[in-house]
Image (cartoon, rainbow, N blue to C red; front, side, top):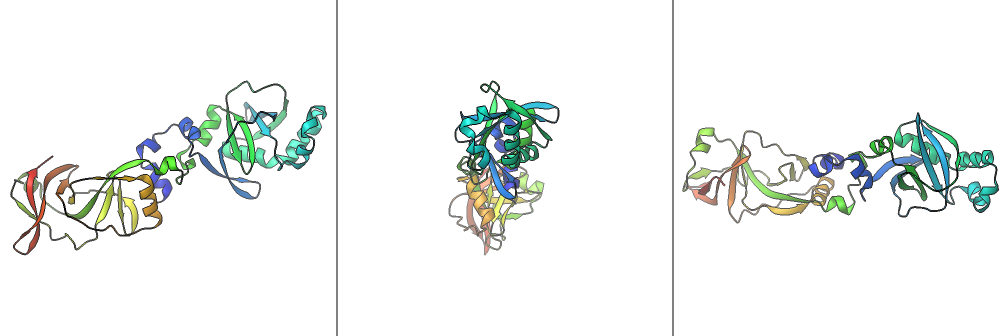
Amino acid sequence: MKPSEILSSIPRLSDMSADAIVDSPAFAMQCRLGDESAVLAAGAARPADVVRLSIMLEDEPHVLSLARSPRFRELDAIWDSRAEVPEPILLALVEKDAGDVLQLVENSVRRQLKLVGILSGDETSASLCLQVAGVVFTLTRTATVVSALGGIRNLDASHESIRSIPLRAATEYAAFALSPEDAAGLAVGDAVLVPEMGTVPARLVVDGRFAVDESGVARYDEGSLVHVFDAETRDVTLGDVLDAAEAPRAVEPKPSGPLRLAGGGRTLAVGRLGKLADQTALIVEAVGS
């Protein structure tokens, strides 16, 4: 699975609203600034000294405020005296120096942008503070802007707030067919033959959603089989799953404690590993959960 597929499988992420994604410290939108690949992220600090621009995103009015940046060479040269520059000249400098930023906003919001004019005074409406490649700007926070930017694809899977999400996992040692009648008739003391134990690689089942083994990370499908797990689950993080997808490795099988036999979304029995004649078996010590 790709990181984006893994993130989309986690309810606390897939259920996030567009507003929550835009406000997340993990917000990071891949984009282009001119000919450069770049990342649009939350601004570290809201700028006070800005050129406020009236823009239209198709039929909606917005305010785009640009902070001073060495990237805007000619605009930077007249920054301190810009109040004395006629508006048509100032607009021409903005279009020349900040055209890449305007294009980035147009592409990111997926609405045609039109530069209308220069605004005076202070910001009066709610806005998003964003930064990209050393350029800091604010943009009116509207439903149009938030819905365009607030997709789960724009969460940085490497950010600690994503990687630290806790999950529960258990090692799965075997999976095999067991008839519904045999499953329903399990009793304490029964020995369930598990010849598959040790003949197939163990895998880690995380959150009932992911199967992690030497092949990487795949969606977990219980299917119609019954499964032998460690009875005790353990803590892992979403970062562990993402790392396993990036660098697959084998899961070390260490069935030293109680085991759980599960199927149909429930625990059928709990027991320990033993022998029946020369066959590996699960000796049932408790039925159900």
